[in-house]
Image 1 (tube, helix red, strand yellow):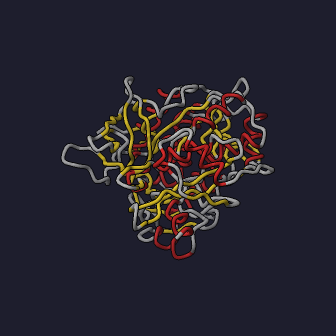
Image 2 (cartoon, helix red, strand yellow; image 1 turned 90 degrees about the horizontal axis):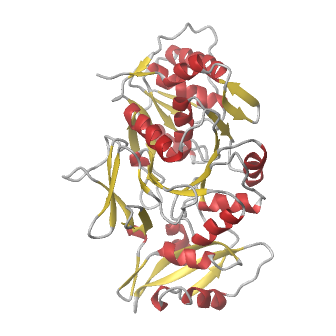
Length: 442
C-alpha cells in the first residue's frame, strides 16, 4: 500500500519559517503551526481520540481550528467541521457519532506527546463534510486522504502553483470549498490568508494590498468585493468563482476592474473542484481536472467520476455520480452549467432554467442580486417569479425589468411578477435558498 508523508510535518521540515497562515493576529509559520498541531494532538489523545475516530470541531476560522484539523490528520482521525451559524439542534445532528466535540481551543496542559503518524494512509477518511442542503436535507460525505491529494493535484495543474502563493480564504471552513484551501496549501507548502468570516472591505483590502495571488469567491461575494473597491494588480493570478454559473455581466465587471476570474464547478461529494476554466475565460466552467471525468447524460444531467469522488457517494452501475445539475459540453469539452434539475421551472410545458433568467436580470445596471423561482399555477402548472435587490441609490420598476428580460430571452422565460427585497436568502457559502424564496412568495 502506498503511503504519503504527513502534510504539515513535510511542509514544516521544508519551509519552517514560511508563513502557513496570515491572520488578523499576525503570521503563523509552518514551524509554529506544527507545534500548535502537536499540542492539539496531545490534548485530543488525552481525551481518548485515536485512529479512525471522528472529531467534531465547532471553532471559528483561526489558528485553533487549523491546528485541530492537522492534529486529527496526525492521529489518523477524521474531522467533522461544524458551521457555527447552525442552531443547537442542527449542530448536534452533525456531531452525532463523533468521539469528541471541540468547542473551545484545545489546551495541552500536562498531556504527554501523542504518537502521531509520519505517513498517511490514502484510504483513510480524513474529513466528513456536510452538503449545503439547498435542495434536500444536508448529508454527511466522507472524503479520504486520496480524495484530497487528487484535489490538490488537479487544482495545481489547472491553476498553477508558485512557492509564494497566498490564497485568500473567506469561505466557511465547514464548506468543502473553504477547507480545501487549507488542505491544498498545506500540501503545497504555501500560504493561506485566513479571514474569520467574509467581509467585503477586508477582502478587497487583502486583494489590493496583501499580495494575494489566488482568491476563492462566489458570484455574490465577488460583486460585493468589487463594490468595496477591489482592483486587479500584478500578484493576483486568479479569482476562482464557484457556487453556481457566473453571470456574464459580473464577469465583464471583474475584467474591467482588472481581476482575472475563472469559473469552477464542484460539489462536496467530489471533494470541491471538478472542472475549472482558464483565468480570463470565465464563460464556461472549463474542463475536468486531472483524475476526473465529466459527461452529460441524454437528459442533460452532469455526471462525474474519478479519483476525487467520495467512496460513500452513490454511483450508478457504470460508476458515474449523478449530480442533479444540468449542463452541456461545448466543442472544446468545456462544461457549461445551466442549473439544477430540481430548480427547473416547467411553465406551460416549457422548461425554464432560473439561472438563465437571473443572469438576464443581473445585466440590468440597477440590479445587484436576483433570485428566480416557480410557483404552482392552475393554468400554467408553474409560473416564473423573481425577487431582485437593487444597488443602493438605484431605481427600477418591475415592468421595466420584465421588458429588459424579454429583450434577451423567450417570452415564456420572462417573470410574471417581480418583487423587491433588501437581500436574498443565501447559505453561508453564498448559494441561493430558492425554496425559501418560493415559500415567501406562496
